[in-house]
Length: 190
Image (cartoon, rainbow, N blue to C red):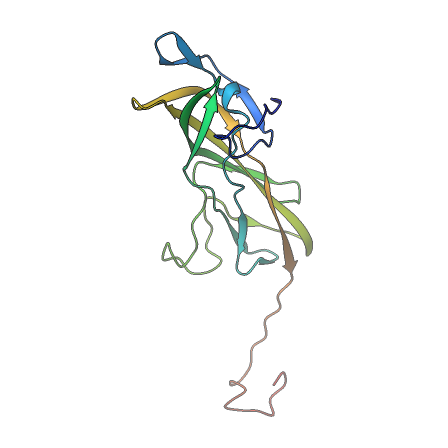
């Protein structure tokens, strides 16, 4: 893990994050930056949300979404001002029950994708037991820098800080009835 450097007028965040070190990429002749150089700049912490309403039903898919998106930050490396663009490339979901899944998409809300609730998605998960589980999403980013002459990709990736959310998993029971409670208010369950 990289150690944060000293604060500067260009540095937005100094929280350390995980680094996968790649080969240097030239930004300008005679000057290069590596993914390690960018480790002290961190995209905003993404959130993770579960559908429906952070509650899951045993045996049915719960849908999970990450809010991570492409982000551009100002910064300075070796005294040179630059702009850094972080782009999410993968989303690792840990569902808190021993199951994990990695996706190349952040997930999509059921209504936004035109799907009914409890439809399986690339980021959904089926819990087998009731309880409270902490679901965590960890986003991996690629990076590019701009020293004023255009974007230059940097080899390697950065892992952002994980986002967590507690999900309550419940059992659901169904029953057949003769009519709705409005139609037949003295019916059992009304």
